[in-house]
Length: 196
Length: 272
Image (cartoon, rainbow over all chains, first blue to last red; front, top):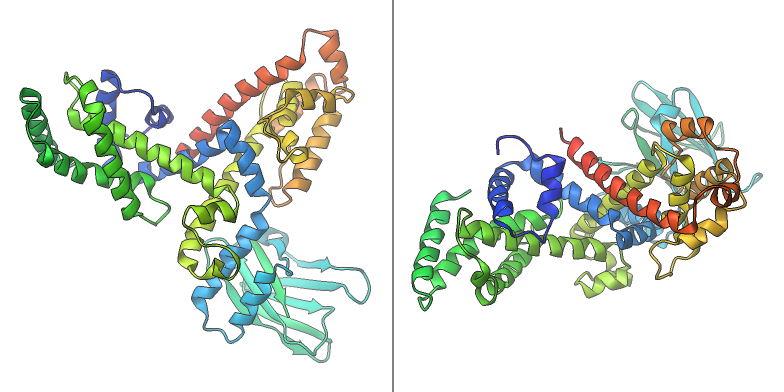
């Protein structure tokens, strides 16, 4: 087999009930190709993952799993952070995330062409407001609604990149916390945790 | 593919066919070397290769071949090694299917599988937890893709909407049900609504349920709705024409097969 496995080949490969002579002759070719083709190995892994969702029972379980997406993402973030550990407040940050009390702002770079605000909490004194501006590859985050008494840390998470931890600075004149980070990739969805 | 090893195993097998009382230890030792690599490749979990599990599965495969399957093989054109490859492949795929299923379960269920993820122990092995959670995230991505494909279906909109309620939305309201899909529930939910109202409700509810997914009705569906019976009451269609509740079940079955095919096509397309 000189070419990559096709959808038909993958379906045939995933069939576990055929041991006929024809099937074995085909399998010999397919296995030889698969053993030496990393791209087809990856395709097969993806196909197996997709197949698990397509089964009737699999879909039901997958829907249950999808309900826990926030929890799973937070757990991935904690794993990554616990492998970094060099930051002074890391243990405290991990503890805060483990309690599950902090929810991320889920944002898209494509929405940040100008200035964007994101608000959380009750309107009035308890509201937290973020003001985000992206310029020259840097993302500036102004955080309103938090007092100067407790240090604020900004945690940025985007898929495929290590998390970025940044201590915010108190700006006396404007009465706000502010942090500047390298901007996430264009077109990416990213998450911001504001930890205090 | 190690041709020398294959040839050696084939020779050992031919000798065995001539003398069934012959000692087969060497043949099985070589088969073990031959199959282990393939099993390890198939059960690979992202970048993690579980050699211990590959060894365990290989031993189980050899046991199955020795005690049962070897007597069912009759050598014609296909090689004995390919026959063993098929058995090993099936064993590995069964294992991966079970593993994927376990991963969709709770931490408690996973703890039984050897993952110690309760309370403070949860983050004691971050590397292993990371692999597990990234794999679960992969499954969630697959669900998102599946749902979006469902909402992009071309064809009769009332059928697609019926399938959405039967196969998916039912689980929002009956999380612990043993029923895997429910045409009866779907029929009761949508019979008094128009196709358009039912589709709007589904889009609203699915995005409340999974706010990160950002799901939407595809162009094909929306065009179909404009052209066809978007404003018709489903009860009128069901009773006024030739449909029955049972049809929802048949449509769902066909839809599952179609979506499976499309999911596999997507899996193949990604790397092309």
